Image 1: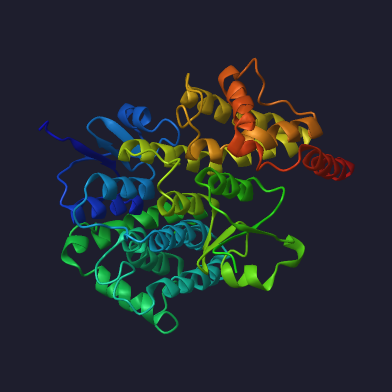
Image 2: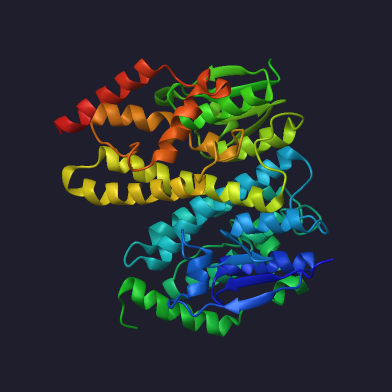
Amino acid sequence: MAEESVKLLGYWASPFALRVKWALKLKGVHYEYVEENLPNKSPLLLRYNPVYKKIPVLVHNGKPLAESLLIIEYIDEAWKQNPLLPDDPYERANARLWAKFFDEKCVPEVMGAFASKGEEQEKAAKARENLKMLERALEGKPFFGGDKIGFLDIAVGWIGIWGRIVEEIAGVSLIDAETMPLLTAWLNNFLEVPVIKACIPSWHELLEHNKGFHKILTGSST
Amino acid sequence: MAQVQLFGLWGSPFSCRVEIALKLKGVEYEYIEEDLSNKSPLLLQYNPIHKKVPVLVHKRKPIAESLVILEYIDETWNERNPILPHDPYERATARFWAKFIDEKCIFALWKACWSEEKEREEAAREACEHLQTLEDVLKDKRFFGGDMIGLVDIVANFMGFWLGIIEEATGVKLLTEEKYPKLYKWSEEFVNCSAIKENLPPRDKLLAYMRARYGVSITY
């Protein structure tokens, strides 16, 4: 059998790259990680993702793929062990729908709260409203995937880390234990799973990095 | 109650996509036309989060978002006319271009047609860039899906049919045969496909709608 080559172009502080790392680790896929020196994008990245010019990019046997959720679906189909998406088409559709909802309705609101100067409380309130809706997909299960981690857990899980960072830097509340008990419990559980925890970057480094990012976005001086 | 129901909108390309897919698979369904200014209680019950069409209801279970619905249809009625290819890398590539069309192309094209004079140049530049990308993706294939229409062709229905009508209504010319010969040829093949042809909204009705909309937009 020909030797397989799997490469991930990522960035240490990117939650989207983290999603892909989690998927690869859960599948037990060996890969070479290539750190992109953002914002100086390498010629390789620009060649592999000419449309969006962004990480993460997965390169499997020389063939590149972009867009984190699409990459995860690909990983799930290319490596059959430890399935991430459910078998049933309706449940698969639901997992995809919720992941789309999270990316389109939760993430921009969280980013909005982070990047705002003066409107952070209003944007955080909207973010909380949308994040709360995710609890419908948990339905009293330990993970979105049921008894074990699945596609939606990997898609959403990073909010437990970055959400706390935004809370600290922007002075807002995003994941509230009182009003979101299911989400809070799930995050506490999910982020402690060894294979998940092992991929998470250093809290302190992430915080400092995002403080700098926040200054740029809001034009603040401290 | 029919086993398969589709809540849709006659002039919506997103709704049309689902009808094309159902037709390709030979699935019988009940079509329910929604009035967006007065959404039905059933729609709000089936799609409480987005409150939008299309919504497919199969055995009383609702699914929203056209791309998600298309994949559901492909996985559920999998004996004939596959919408997605078999190979995982080709599947991922098809999904990538479908997402690109939905997130970048359609919006850019729409903006280029309806923009104010001063924004039009920039909007047109972006729209043309995306059309060129699609031209390059298509290469010399008959359809994006190869010999048969696939996911990307269905999702590109806006370019295949709606765009030409909007161009006629607004006078903006974007997808021309000179600049994009392959894409232009594709759009002609696309509208002549039997599965597509029968599911497109009436051209005159859509043109009248776009003209009326354009008439409103230029009087402000």
